[in-house]
Image (cartoon, rainbow, N blue to C red):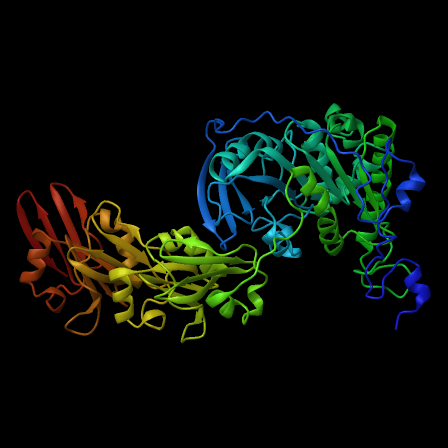
Length: 634
């Protein structure tokens, strides 16, 4: 049991920082320090900053070359968007947690909260979604949370030179290339925006807010390094960047004597933050409630995290002093303990939310909603679905209600059904209840093979497994796939949604082991090595045309083949897969008895020769040149 003495030193009985000691609220130029410290922790002691005038108009022009190259809904509220950056000459993934009322109010825009990652940012998703509860926390909040993915050791700035295979130009991307996409395509307001980050991202948030003050109403640094040019800091930054990916700071801003270092130093440009709502926090480097204690009192096993947080505290104090000198109000939080680690940044995200909400002019509190009727009967028995975040609302064909972890749909004909997770994301992407699938007719179910999950809908299904993702299957493709044994059959799970054929009329869908093609000639599967050969020949838009048969065993039992509009692809274990096009060579091979004749199976595709074409077989060659056909056996 924790003693009262320990509790009085600044920890609550559950091990969390005490409310009265976990922050120091200082309002420079507003109230005396003693009065500020006497206020309750939840009090807003800062005067409200004047609203920031945003320069970006609605419907703004997209810079040349900037385009969305891919969109993938990861859930009904979380979407990944890949935006091509001409400045960096690569596609940058940005994930968006859409505003609470996204589905219930489809004409509404939402303020932006740009959340920046730390020094070891990964290329697959933001540390915020990996390490914190950000997805659940913002499920009931009416902001679009924007999470850039990637940028390890970048400081989200424009680099002087490429390094480590990266041409970092993050400032250009975040302030010029990305905003029009967010504003025009993702219902992100041009009137209200906030920026926050942890560690490297906290440094960058202050830099970007200072350099583009017309863009942001709020800025927060959680354990950021807020002075980059003070004694020893360039060397500390260089050491950290080498440790996190092998990057070199001289390729970022040059040598420490280069003017770019001072241009980017948050400490030297605090006057640019006037009129903005500011939040700065840091621990003191000593072991706190979220740290693993070593055998020495106050010392965490996270030694590197102790040192980095001490640097953050020191530079944050200098930054706060400079704000004080310039008469700029800020909310500065000095925790009595804690290292440089994710649990504290999650804590600060929660703590700073009321101030963010006030700056963005949104309600900080969760909505008062209840789940009742058939939707409530289902949802109340499914704890993982979480709290409701909207009231019920109309959707095509029925009603819906949004919850923290998914949505429940209802109609008189289908009853109440849950759609959530990656399947919910795919359902959203293909149009939801107003799209091709209609309303759900089942909850999410386990597939019989135990490897995946699926939801059935009025007009099809969505199947998911970790290796393939979630994909819609419907219509003749679904019927054909079912006749082949569903996911346990020869094709396995879907790896794409249905798509129009390229160069032909019809639909094609890919599966783990093959594809199903649907044309006016019927629905046929092409699989394995035959599919691979077919694809090298241009698939449905190429030399063979569309399939006209399933894969079939040859009469001699040795090989397999598929028929196509313009020929056949044969395969055997000994020869591989080769095509033979309808025409003189095919006719001559037919006269020889096909694969059962003296020539055997093809061992190559048709090739050009002087005056015509030729094709090789196991035991000979057929040549058609200068109007003559010659069969030469080995």
